[in-house]
Length: 357
Image 1: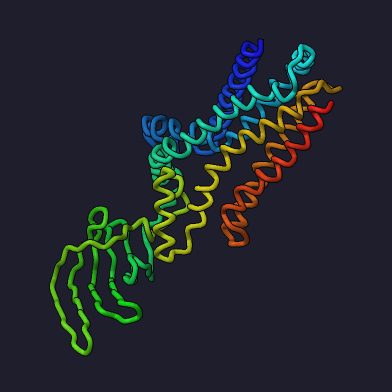
Image 2: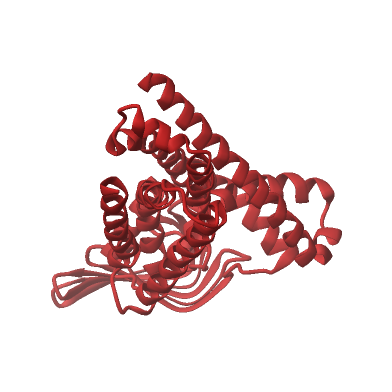
């Protein structure tokens, strides 16, 4: 009996979850078309369908996965309670704790799919989506930088007065190498051009090798060299973190920290968000089930209303704490996890009340 009951609840939960996604995505697409109509009319239809919408829909669905999870739990559990099905299940000897098992299994399926999508599938798709929006909607690319200075390796500091990403060229470049606090080598050039990966070409260069009181100077017009930096290491746009898979994101954060780059808060927030949003599936399922498992006067509309308020407040809370992290008032870890901590406390309180009643 329990296995049949488990399958029934899981089917209802995931079915309602998918239905909620489809319904809200349909509404979102209509609003998005209305908002970006001028851009869509300028762009090729094929690009709009395959580069934008085909990549926007999974991105949006995954971004608001906690909302869809909560709506699904509240809606179908309230319906079960309204039809006295919850009472029948509990009366047949199924404990409230046991009744929670298929809910948590469903939450695990949602959390796992959310993780795979956010960590590996959506970031490559975002490259096409963001390229489309940068071309036809609003250009948010960062193509220029000035007074760029960063540590490219331990004891090696690079500087460019200006970098133009459209031509992949930097101007007034220098690379200083230190042994402790002592300068041992300095490369300067009028321009430096990026090729691929860490391949750079310096032009009109001069290398000063310093050894004690002696100095060796080498000059030339062109030199191919390897410098462990790429333009994306110092030209950072507000959407770059959305294009990286989780392994790429973690590698990038570690590399930038080693170089002493400060403006990586959005990358750290995104890294923590991908884990926190998976945990939210379990927390909001616990709250939703505990809140809507009792038949209430006024019908399921009351539970759905309370559920929407709680789910939107969760999203708002997460947005506010993210802005605190970007401003430096708190760490990205605390910013992304404190809403989960607060809501799990709410969930435990509601669960105890529901199981006691």
